[in-house]
Length: 275
Image 1 (cartoon, rainbow, N blue to C red):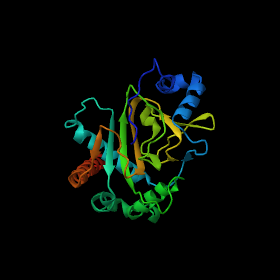
Image 2: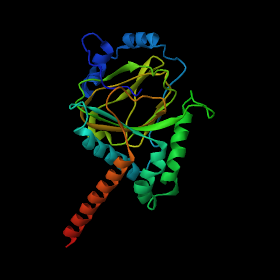
Image 3: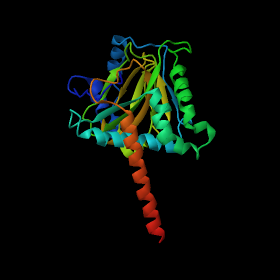
Image 4: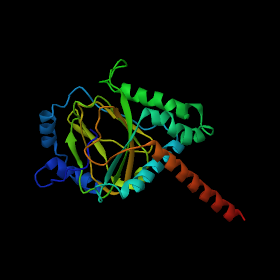
């Protein structure tokens, strides 16, 4: 599953204590190498696998990044009153391939397509996501498993982190694209322990990080703001126990209407300013 922000035992777990530090505190703190080595051994992390980071993969256009962020904000507010966890800090939103091709495409993405270069048009999104899924070295082009897309929002302060771990048997491939700029939140840094070194990966908007399940990784606590991401993961990935929202076609219709209202208000403000 996509791991959740639930670890906060700083007294008994040196790795959690390290991940719970603020970004500034962590710069001055020693890396707990002995604990990381022990964790890598206990989780049977592979010594032959690593992660892949690309700053400018050119997968999503700025307008598409903004659209996914707007969808996250809309669904966060829409589900806020019905969720069982009134103090939730994390939401995972599932998108099916059919939704990307049909309702989202027909009602929303196709409107953007007319202003985009051909490489960004929405009909190519599934091909791009399929390619990302197969790029990870544990997945071959003839893999019997499929992928799905999930959007994630994590709001600080989480008061917890994602402890170092390797993904389970449900996972063969994970790709993550940050949807919003890091200036909108603090913390939430993903890090990988590879070749006896701890690597913190930058999160510029629209960048890409990929890894197979056997790479030891963790995520620092989010101390403020909202961190938004798009994941391409195995279809068998459960996304966590709580906080999972399944997007419906009715949600897409409501979101489309919401965007139309917001766009109308923006046009009115522009007209008012020019008069």
